[in-house]
Length: 147
Image (cartoon, rainbow, N blue to C red; front, side, top):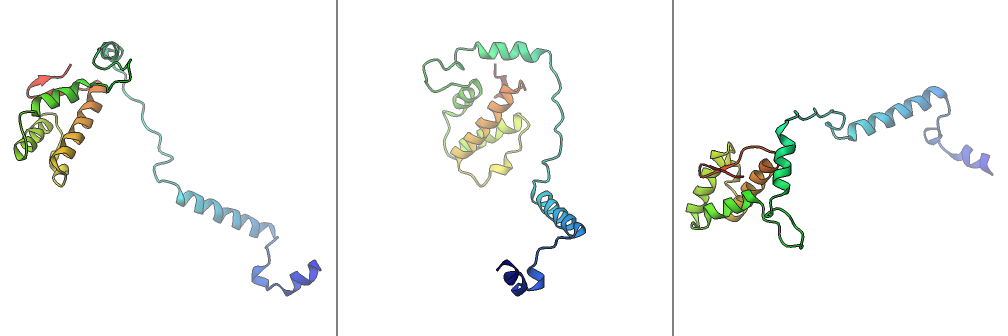
């Protein structure tokens, strides 16, 4: 019965059993997998530069009572709190201007946030400053360094 099925099957549907054809099929499959893979998947990221002050600063920041979360309360991050204090008096376009000034002060180009509303601009700036703070980079708000 099996032979009758193979006899009725057209030639182009029959499985290639020659070794060269099998190798070609494997090569095509591997190429498709490589092309579907993210282009940066094989790039090795460089190791970060070691900073001897990093451990000391990290220990200082871990011991900061505003950052510890022992009672499941909302964590108060120093850069976020400083940003809130700097912008609490302002609203509307004045608040946007203050947020943009703080961004420029820290070397961030705020034009990429022009299409966002003021709350989203404040959130993005706060996230960026908090990330810099915890990577041990200098964060200044209104001329004062956040510690």
